[in-house]
Length: 279
Ligand code: COA
Ligand code: MG
Image (cartoon, rainbow, N blue to C red; front, side, top):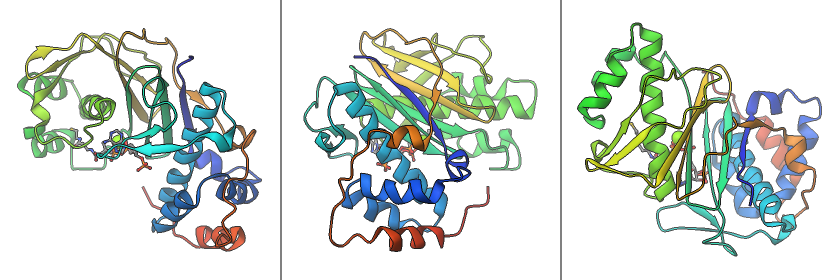
C-alpha cells in the first residue's frame, strides 16, 4: 500500500472560481455528522478546514484501499483518533489542520501528522514564548530552541519541536499528554527550512531511545512546517507533501449525504455568512 502525504491550502480552495459549487458538492459528499460538525464553527476558515479534513480522509482511504467513496466507514478511538472501521489494523491515517493548511498522512503502520504555521506574532519574541512553555520541553530541547542565532530561527526551532511532539502523540493516539517532557526529541545539524526533508531526528520516551519510530520533517510552503511520525518498519517515503486541490478530492466522490434534513443551498449560505479569521 502506497503511503500518502497530501496537503490542501484553504486559501487556494477559496480562490477557485468554482468554489461555491465545489463547496455545495462537498456538503453532499460527506456524512450528515461531518456537515453538522463544520456547521458548529464560528469562523469560515475553521468550517472549511473541518470539511476538507473529512474529504481528505475519505478520498485517501478510498484510494489506498480501492474502495468506493460510499463504502468507507470511520470509527474513533476513545481518545478521538479516527480510523477506517473496515481496516483498523492494516491501514492508518491522520489529519492535521492549522493556519492555511489541512494535511493528511497515511501508512500501513500507525501514523501521526502535525502541521503548524510558523507564526512569529504569537508572543513578543520566540524567547518569551519558549519561556512561557518551558515546562513542556526537556533541557536538551530548550537548548535546541534557544540556541539559534536570531528570533526567526528560534521561532522555527520552537515550532519544529512542537510539531514533533504532537506528531508522536497523534501516532500513538494519546493526543493530549500530561507530561510532554517524557517525549524528548534530539535533532542533528541539518537545517530545518522550506525545502528540507529530514528523517534523522531521534525520539526518546522517558529517556529511552525509541528506534521503531521514524520522523519525516518538511515544509508544505514557506510558512508551514510539518512532522510525520510512523511507528513501524516502513521506510520514509522520501518526498515532500503533495499539494492537492478540492477538485482532485471531489473527482471520484459520491453523494453520501442524502439526509432529508440537508438543504445544501441553506448550508452554503450559512457557510458564506461566517466571518473569516484574521491571522
Ligand atoms: N490521536 C490522533 N489524532 C487525533 C486524536 C488522537 N487522540 N484525536 C483527534 N485526532 C485527529 C482528528 O482527525 C482531528 O481532526 P478533527 O477534529 O477534524 O477530526 C485532528 O487529529 C486534529 O489535529 P490538529 O489539527 O493537528 O489539532 P491539534 O494540534 O489541536 O491536536 C490533538 C489535536 C488531538 C493532538 C489534541 O489532543 C491536542 O490538542 N494536543 C495538544 C498536545 C500539546 O499540548 N502539544 C504541545 C506540544 S509543545
Ligand atoms: Mg496540530
